[in-house]
Image (cartoon, rainbow, N blue to C red; front, top):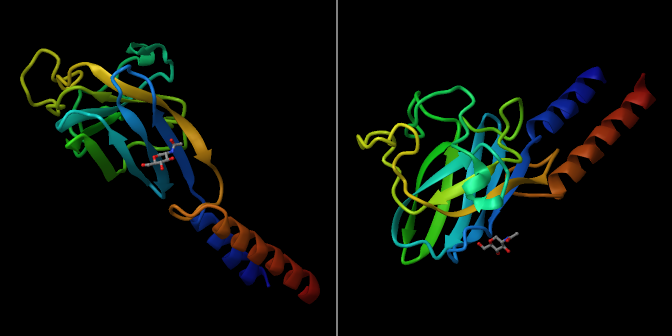
Length: 198
Ligand SMILES: *[C@@H]1O[C@H](CO)[C@@H](O)[C@H](O)[C@H]1NC(C)=O
């Protein structure tokens, strides 16, 4: 019976995940929308839709502070706990917050990618910090401008929002209530069977 309990506990652990949401309301530029962050093991899936960005690429970064008291200006610099230079998402030399660019087509920006450096858990969790969308393309540190290695020369901050908790605990992918319910039922069933047989 210990084996059954162990297997059921393992199922619960593997579906353990966390989700967060950023609602873009600040910036005064008419840019609006939201993105969700879903922790899937060591990766985080980022998905959402943003409207009213001008066509083209826009720098998309996690900034260190969830402080919107002066709008996007008070969110601090890119989140950079390891004191590295700015870079592309796939570079070893990057800020934790460096998520590259998002692409707007005719004012609609569909966002869907994964990143394995940011995390919703642990000492360098991005929860409570901010996401900022910039007016211009992030040159990913390669542009040779004075600010390429700090901000990617991505221009002004046109929209931002705080990374807030959406769901914690037992979540599989994007589904919400069903998986935790089933997992808990299975665990309870396992414990009941254990009582009977031991
Ligand atoms: C997030 O955006 C979607 C459309 O992309 C919308 O249906 C949903 O209501 C938004 N959620 C929030 C909390 O703004």
